[in-house]
Image (cartoon, rainbow, N blue to C red; front, side):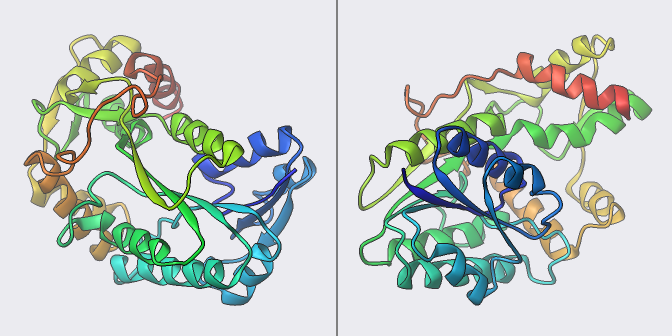
Length: 297
């Protein structure tokens, strides 16, 4: 059996991957900033390394003797410079991989990382890809998933309180959307198989492209609000709302920059839908998750 290291092990993708590997009898080390949240993985046989992925000593211990790793950079909405934060995590992880025993790595990257500059919240992920690609002897597969269906859950309160569904994304532009469980399952398959070599990337694009107007219609039917309208918010209004929620100005500005690229059709221009890039969970199926959050709101 192989020994794996899972970063972000208590998140939507990391936890599912860790559980999948443990269920197959593999040895799994989990890196988490909160050992209490990772206790369920420890109970199933995981070895916890508590701390941050900028901690060089922690990473050196976690990667020592490991065969493969799942790499993701955490979200830090309060970072004073969001891209610099991403790069700091990526650089520390890259150095640990460079001197360690890991021969295969699967990363959580994103659509939009084909853009070299001014790509908002994914610019640091591009830098991470470049750093890992430069490591001799490391085979790395960068997963580039599209917009997470889970992102829409933040709109449940708006739907309940104001009777609308909205964001700064255009209502008429059809984009791929993916459930994070499908990202985890794709990563798990490749980590189990270790069937990749050199440097490569794989887009993950959900089952089909949908507009936000269509998502509003599907969600509205699920929550008992047929005809739930979708409203595109001006960028300035969206920025003020996110800052009002406690998010830092750096990440908010990066998010707005990314959405502008999305609305202009730039984010997905490099992605091609194939059998391999298509994932199963539909927006109609995910509507049940939205409904559950809506009812708890």
